[in-house]
Amino acid sequence: MEKILLFALIGLGAQLVDGTLGMAFGVTATTLFMVTGTPAATASAVVHVVQVGTTAASGVSHWRFGNVDLPRVLALGGPGAIGAFAGATLLTGLDASAAAPVTSSILLGLGLWVTVRFARGAARPARARWGAGRLAPLGLLGGLLDATGGGGWGPVTTSTLLSVESGRPRTIIGTVSAAEFLVTCAAVAGFAPLLRAEFAAHAGAIAAMLAGGVAAAPVAAALVGRANPRLLGIVVGAVLVALNLRTLLAGALAPAALAGLLAGWAAAVAALLGLLAARGAFRRPRVDLVSPGPDLQQTDRYVYSSESR
Image (cartoon, rainbow, N blue to C red; front, side, top):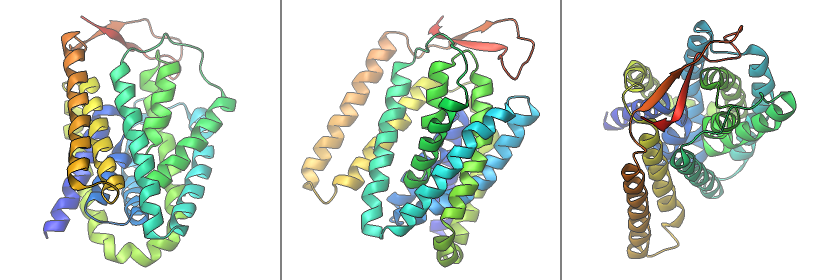
């Protein structure tokens, strides 16, 4: 019973992060799942099964609100599905001792990516939309990392597109969320041999994480307008780095040395947060109202300025 409650809390916590930041459900859930001692391939497989439900609900919701550009969903999600299937097949073929460092290394890198992405904060001026020629390799990389790392689609694709198309945050997030359903289904297909053997043993964990994620969805929607996404993104990224450093180096460093390394990382993040707070980086962002374009699929009505009031 205690484990079922723990998995429900993992799903709830991961959905709170994802619903507030628009990314990191898979990265957060897989990292927390592996901390419980679950093998890397099993953790990634279980999290992707849960995400079939959460990404379907998210994609439909964004479509109903007009946030989805369907041609771009296919241009991004098609290659992403190919990458996810390949990554899941690769991870399933590795034994547990070999898979854990691979997955933890990817999660560590994604944690650093999230930390740096939100620490930088300021968005570039909006540029022309990326076409299929650029979306395809981005989707392929995002899908590959998503399956082998148990998450990473949002940190890779959403962060990249927001950095080059900063004038369309609503459409970018909606399109990436809809494409993630294709990626998740492909990853589950790649994990099918593992799932046949392990599904019954982890059915309770899957149900608990799904229930926790569904319960957290309305809470995350309420928090998204109140929580400071920049502050939360840095904290979440820093926690992911610390947890995966611990997993990777637990057998290579003495406990005291590992504790010192983690303490040093915590001090560096605290110093970064203090510096950004002193510069007013965590003040409530200004909302600039701009005239909508002829097609709300292409131009967002509200553009959030990177500058504070």
